[in-house]
Length: 130
Image (tube, rainbow, N blue to C red; front, side, top):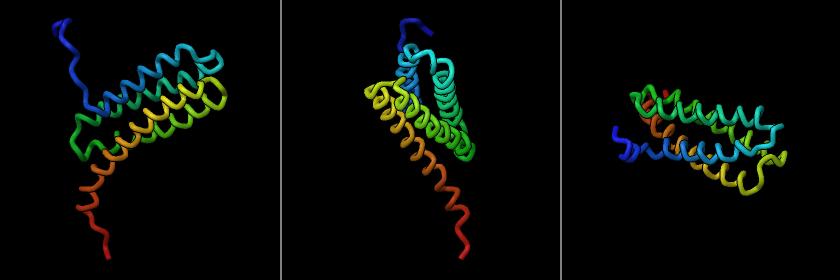
């Protein structure tokens, strides 16, 4: 690849997850030491796992995507709680917490929509017995 060429574009959801991580990375560097190596490290790991789950799901067959999408949803739900803990302990100020939460919420909505779309064919193939 030519070093002067722009990087390839990523699917929207993956781009948003990457953007959230880059934002978090800046905040992570200035977290108080009491949280940087504990909860901060856990959040960092969860964010990379969300990116990984999304990246894997993008390239799978539709029926194989669901477990990875649901894994990403579970991890984003956990991240919401961890961000809240950092905010409540004053390790994140209001602005940083709000910015992270809004971006995470947007990713969560996209994952929820994706999960809903993936789940529809399964429900149509197995109608409820009456």
